[in-house]
Image (cartoon, rainbow, N blue to C red; front, side):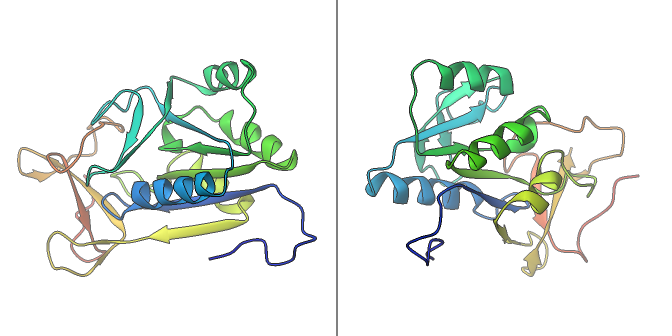
Length: 197
């Protein structure tokens, strides 16, 4: 897919990759990073510090592919890293829903300055409510790709993330964020998803 069809068009936009867990968001995120790197673009990659599932200083997909990344706890630290003499063409952020809401204006400003922004994040939490930041990026991003997983129950198209606690669907009072993988989450379709109560 080519975004700059007109050679006179200006650089600077936001690409959002979203969907439920196990939809391949991180693999697509890494694929795009590699694509820009092959084109000799300087890419800066960030991830939230709280995501230590597979590696502390890399973005890693559930299938094991990875790319080095700066691990930061908030948007202020992200700017500190960028301001330390880091020139870049592409800014890539994984799990954008775990950043504070200031990240939205930062990404928008960099896109306005001609930078290419790639962000990946869950569109909804386990309660099926919109996740912060992704909800705002849906309407300011130039390019939005919503990916789907395969339902763990019926094999249909999954668009929801089911939190599992002790083998059953999580209750409403569970913490909103719990970083994990196959051991605590399943992809579910509309019909197999069990709303927490």
